[in-house]
Length: 266
Image (cartoon, rainbow, N blue to C red; front, side, top):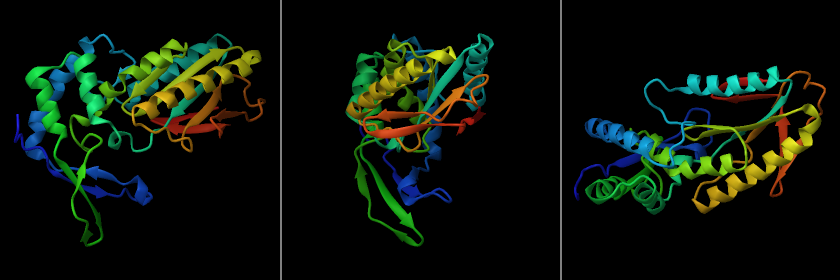
């Protein structure tokens, strides 16, 4: 499996109007694209057959998009409103999620959780190995440095590998009794109850965020507290004063409007 020929160089390109720390790799691999698409199709089929696959984990694929993700979330919210309840929704944001994946952890998960082994697992190891990265600013390009973490940005396989990598996350959220929805690196989790039980909902949300954050730290992912948002949805919620959650010393206030996938507001 050596010499697969996918260990190309990634040029870090900064998005318009974003800080340099937000730069992420864009890799040109037109010739490899067809191979990756075939592998993705078989990997998705294998992943969905795995014991840890959850239907609420929707990777970027045919007939699934930000619109279908938003439809599922808003449907659950409106159902709670019809039952005269409020919904406390949390939208988690990860810092450079695709860039910090632990490759050994990913390969172990592909093997132990989803049953990939032998030549197939060796192919994925070769696909992830021997990659380099350089930074381009204006006419200047830095020297190449090895990439030891993450999946290739802009690749066909990147989103589904990230979905399989974070598959245990759904079990943690579900164990805490929180409905959830995952779309690539966007995570929405929410809980509902009567408005009188708002303190209980906020406490439950806080516990869930702390558990998710602990799992992410163990798996080399980083929750971005500055961009994590919480909103209270329902009838007559405008009279509720702004609340705050203390997550390991980080204060996260509730928002009146959020923008994730599309836009939701009170």
